[in-house]
Length: 220
Image (cartoon, rainbow, N blue to C red; front, side, top):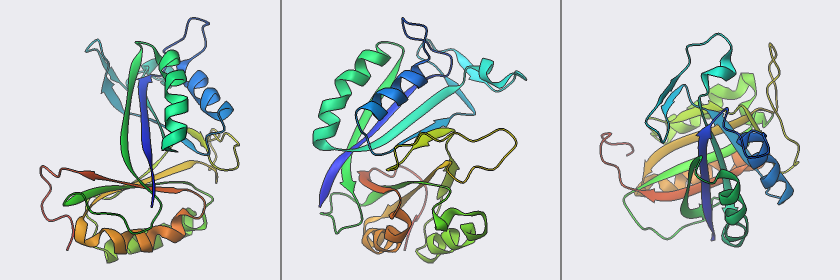
C-alpha cells in the first residue's frame, strides 16, 4: 500500500510575492521544478480570505475579482517532506497550506474509519472524460451508489507529462485538469477503488478517512 499526502494550498488570485510575481505562477513553477508528477489548480466561485474579506465574481474583468485559488497535489511522503518548506517560503503569510495523509492508488487499504473521501486527479483527454464518455463515469459512480459525487475542471495544471495546461479562451481543451471527488462508506470503498482504477491510468487516486457529520446514507 502506497501512502502519501494530499497537499492543498489556498490564496487569492492576485496575491504577489516580493518580486511582483503572482503566487500562482511561483507555486506552479516551484512544484514543476521539483519534478512533482501532477498538480491541479482550481478557482473558487466566491470566498473569504484570512482578513475576513469576501471575494465574489462580480466584475466583468474576471481576474480583478481576486477569487481564491486552490492548488492540490498528491505526493509520496518523502516528496512531501522535501517540498513543503519551499512552498511555505513562497506562501509566507499570504495563504493557507494544509495536508492530509492517506493512500495513493487502488490497492486494498487498512480500514481506519467508517467513511472515506476518494479523489481522482486526471485530465480531460483521459478517454473516460472525453465529452461523449462522461455518462460512463457517472454510470460507474451510480452503480456503486456514490451520492454527492462531484466532477470539476481545473483552470491550470500538469500531469505525468510535466506539461502545464491551461484552458484556451473560447475553446475546449482536452488537457484541462479534472477532479472527481466523493465520500463513500468503508464497506463500499475497495469495490469503488477497484472500479475507478482504469480511470487513473493517466492520473492518481487518493483516499483518506473522514468524519461524515451529515449527508445521509452515502452508500449501501
